[in-house]
Image (cartoon, rainbow over the protein chains, first blue to last red):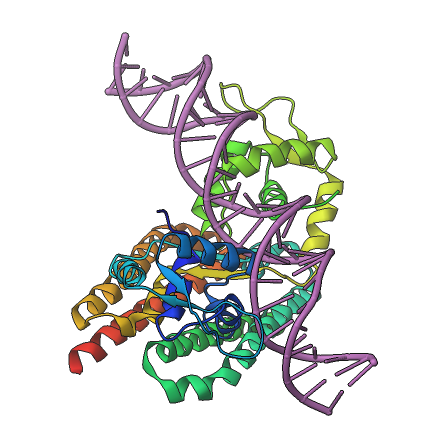
Length: 173
Length: 173
DNA sequence: GACGGCATGTAAGTCGTTACATGATTTG
DNA sequence: CAAATCATGTAACGACTTACATGCCGTC
């Protein structure tokens, strides 16, 4: 069986407890979403596929009063997760339109440039706000998820500082 | 006409001087590649499309002894580039398998964890090395491309420091 | 004359998002 | 009972990579 980028997020989050596709989407959006997103269009088909391959299995009595399918990770699935975790990461991609626009910003008028810096800063401040809203809960739980969150904060702090610095440089010239 | 992510990189680099698809690919790989990649499979069809729409036009006497098609940006193309530059950026996506693995690293044995930190650090050190190789040329030219490069260096420096810190924390415990 | 780099392109396939469709249950 | 939220899924589309095919030019 071949795995794709969403396989391991699913396995990773099922390691804690059984969850439905909906649960996985929710928890991804509150955690890994900032560096590893996943959509329903990926999650549901992949859950089905992982179940066919025996890496996860549906739980008999799902929690809650609604019709839903919770999956639990199997020992095969746990082994696959572990094997993946123990190999060197490969994907590291950034796609940042703000950096691209700033790259070409020699083309702009000073006022337009300042507006660009501000919109880049505003974007990263928005992300920081959302990350800071999660921070108290992540801190309480600690562990590696919290380390990753702190790194995310540092990354976006750096971007804010960069945009701020460019704006100040502009006003000095 | 609808634009895609590669349209503006092309227009941006044609702003300086006429270039072929091959030239554009080469210059992208040496500059924006770290935050905005583009492949031949995108560049060639898009150049054709931009030419049909009158945003770029083939140059009559391409440089060099080989058969090649150089394109020059038109005034319409320049206007489109400018309009795009003057609107707030939207795309900002990170896809980082290293962060994802570290997120789930509570699952690993200490030795495996250290190996993970090291491979993450090695990745970012590799990028830093490539960026530093470009640095002298970018510094000489200056302007916004150099500002973006410096930010890229800072970003990967931060990632290296993060991985190093995690490793040290591991050895202390 | 072989090899590396220049040069253009396409086909196939993967990846991922968005929008839509559907319907149940809880809460105000 | 209306609205929000829970819950599952698919279809269509767009983005992007990889691999391949082709051939020329310059140089060793």
